[in-house]
Image (cartoon, rainbow, N blue to C red):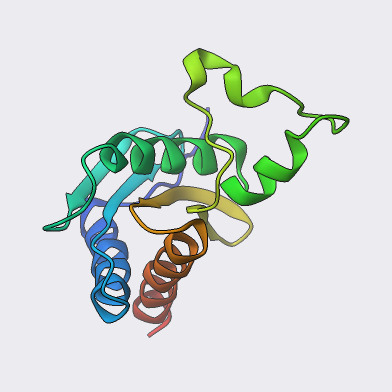
Length: 142
């Protein structure tokens, strides 16, 4: 029997809170998706002004980060010509995202979920996703 650790809805809301606060700070309205450890959506927020197309991209970034158990940015590097995962982004209907903005949420060396952001540049998406994780870890730790 497996024991699976995953984010709760309350924890997903904390991740969204941290990410959206950073997005407001940098004045880039974001689409923010939180998935469980298997990549299934727990919570989603499209901030006022978040790009319509970014709603799906943010969810797919969270899906990829959870499923691959790595950042989407690092997956992007591994999927370039000549690298071991070349072309992986075309697998499973193109759902795997290889652009920065998806980060796994890791507790005790175990992926318990992921956060995916889209609407800014990849570096802005990463910055806001990391802010979500930072707030989550500060709440978790104390």
